[in-house]
Image (cartoon, rainbow, N blue to C red):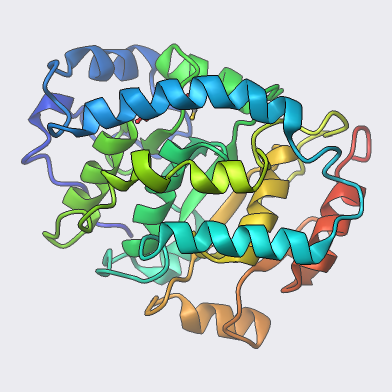
Length: 316
Ligand SMILES: N[C@@H](CCC(=O)N[C@@H](CS)C(=O)NCC(=O)O)C(=O)O
């Protein structure tokens, strides 16, 4: 079991009593959490950073949508793919590669149902810093990709919080749901960071290099593939860490297909490494498991064609 979140230090969130592990939290409760935040609730600097970066992205996103790398299901130049993703990773070093502190998460429970649910999209720099924090805290999560044009998950986000804004975190163990990446990162460290603060520069870096992967990857992981199909019965499982170049390419595809998955973070020093070794016979990421078909692979060049062939419209 994940440790219960401490209410100390979260007073501005007005924590509700821990619910049963019902899947969706109460929409009114989420709204009240958002409204209850005083104007100064974010760390000084964080809100400004978010706003500035937000307006940059609101300008860039439509542009990238226009320029964005074309039909993601088509054959790609793998050298270009891996090179642009590797430079993206360099721009985000050191965030999202290593475990900074153990979350204390019980790996056996992580295998079944993680208590964290993240609504996000891969290209969003604010979502990226939350995923980086999850790698550093060695946390697993259910990821619900919400690309632009999303058919399913954006509606859920609106029902939970009343607006389409990403990231949105739901912590089923405490009943907390929250927008605002800076607040989410601080919440995760407070509750799962064994007393540590977010790594230096993690929050502030979003304005400087947070958007670099988005640009270099030409908006991959931003828009729903126009042939994306029905949701599979069971969630896929991805062993990954945020700053791994090939794992990024796989996450982009999962996002463009709006496929929900269990994200098993395996950064350097992760307590999940043995689990990965048992499942795949190797410590390499990415490693994708599709329980719906039995497909398993650690090769992004095989994973991409598999996903786009397996999950187009009316394939299920
Ligand atoms: N201050 C927010 C900014 C979040 C934000 O602007 N997210 C953008 C994506 S990069 C968004 O939700 N856009 C609306 C949309 O994609 O429909 C945070 O730090 O989380």
